Image 1 (tube, rainbow, N blue to C red):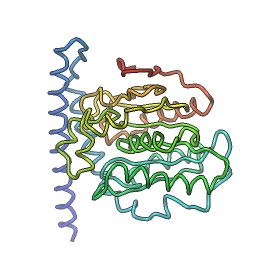
Image 2: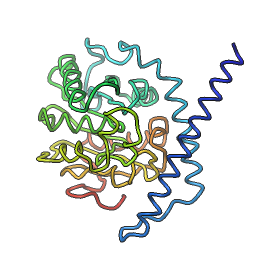
Image 3: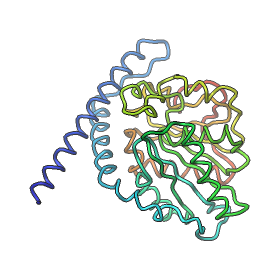
Length: 300
């Protein structure tokens, strides 16, 4: 039994290593291609790529091992409400990314509670046999339950990867700016990703860079009227090109975190600390990061 477990762990580690190496090979090619253009980014040094592969591998292993925890819905959302709310402790709803479930937020949920945020919940959804519009509707249902649990208190929405895009879709469709306190996204493909065409399922393939879904979302998209921050990593290996991480919609602000892989943003304490700083600033009514008023500009 122990030998079988070691074998499975070895296979998991090998697969995670292959995915990390392949994704960063494509990342390096993309950066090298754009470095020949007018808006060149300096190609990353080999050490950064090696660190990225290691972080990608670690993140994938952690996601796989903790995935079963996300199946216990009561662990992540209780419609009865939680602790008392204050200006510094609003209800918070975390929305995971593609192929994940609520367990993706295990580390963030722990760190947020340690930072004094006691009303932290997660929205979990399936990435299979569904589409973007259906997930927007499901998110609205979850937010309605949160509003019922905390009447008169606007929640903070946090999305990783696809989760941030779903939040944007909800804001546009349901006028969400009237119902939320702030929005923060982590590694969200705001303009899609070239790697989406290589993924499994129609939901993943719909996230193509500057594809129909992105263009439809941007069409007549109103300006964000609440504090909205897009945090991203310059060595994100799942959202290519880097430009895809930057929303074009008016009202968003950008913040580049220290270099981490796409999935490892969920497990990096340094990334959380930067996220926590941005969160405190938005709750305090200010957010001194680069304003986003049109097309995404250079990194911060």
